[in-house]
Image (cartoon, rainbow, N blue to C red; front, top):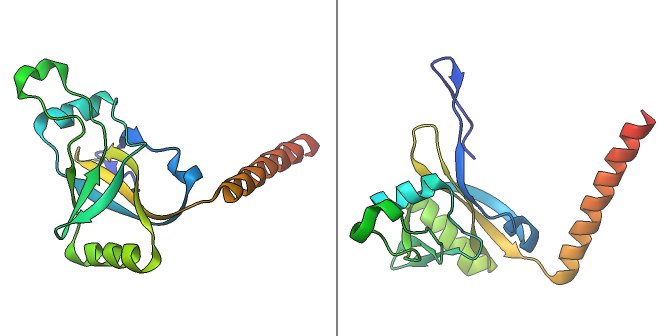
Length: 162
């Protein structure tokens, strides 16, 4: 994630438009990458309203380009007939070297490209945080949940005892 930079004496805020919270539970997250996302004007306005959903989406390399598939950005009501298709594939903007690394990770290691969040950076540009991830099995998910619960209980006990 991009750090929030100081701008004219005040801290710049990063506004999260959509978050994929299930991804950290269902996948073992490896490297993350900040990508640009090619949007139409009404999509930007709908994202600023914060009702987008990337819970069931994924990224795919098609014809040498990276696309975000199955993401949902609702229509912008004030746009009338100039609206966008809510579930259209959206092109992701990455450097050629990064695209080659992603392609190699998918082909060689059997990894998946999972979007973690869509946010607006300090310059007001829409960015997508993309992760190279491996799917977890059910027993791995249970193990992670047990470990998280133990860490929470341990922290609570340490607070109580001083």
